[in-house]
Image (tube, rainbow, N blue to C red; front, side):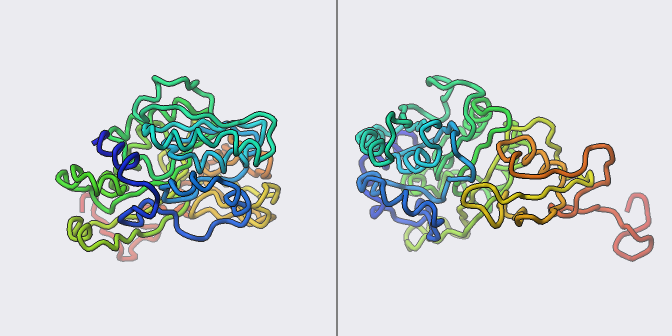
Length: 350
């Protein structure tokens, strides 16, 4: 299937117009601060873009970023503008035709962004074998990926190696396609469904468990949208399977707990992150308004305190008292809090 994918993206597809579904297409709603950057990206790079999301998290100035499955380089060049000359972007892809497009325009983008030296490089390699490339462990501030993990045959290996390459406090921020159930084996062998980012998609709960096994203890969903196929032949093949494009952020942090625990902590966002003056979006359930004291669980506290976001927040509370499960993260005490309310049996084994 790896050869099939290389042929699909290197030879079958000549532009995004050749895609048969919208799985590998980013939806509208580009943030305003990214539009001027995107307008400077070379036309050939843009035409060979096959992504399903936006992989530009906040506060990237000076960051060292690794893009897994960088393709024609669109995201790498956008990120190169955001990290500045003090930062760097490394793209890895297995399809030589895509890499040739990306490498052709390194000098063009250096000049467009006004840099004295380029801050982008591209490597040919397989994401399941990142350890074979010239990449330092504990080096990258952020790893991104855009609609590529579903194309990998050993997704667990990619997640494990991404964890090893990240600095402590770094994050894997990526968009991919997920399914509402496990895809039948016969469909995973269909080259078109696989190349269209559908039949290689993980069942979302399998992904969460793989991420945790790799060391990312508390995966956070940032945004998601349902995917439409709009191709009668392919729709018939997939039947009742439902697919979604979703963006997750996974932090490399020691001490994260399996559940969201309450220690009476809170944060206050200062509004000082560029392009996020009114609010900071950590994930889908944590939209933090500027100036408001915002109660958080212990894991969220660490995601803000032990990462690049720390200077932009005030922190309240410590770890001296544990108050139980944190209701604000979507979990609650499974036992009755009021005796005899009828919601559960009083029997010990019932």
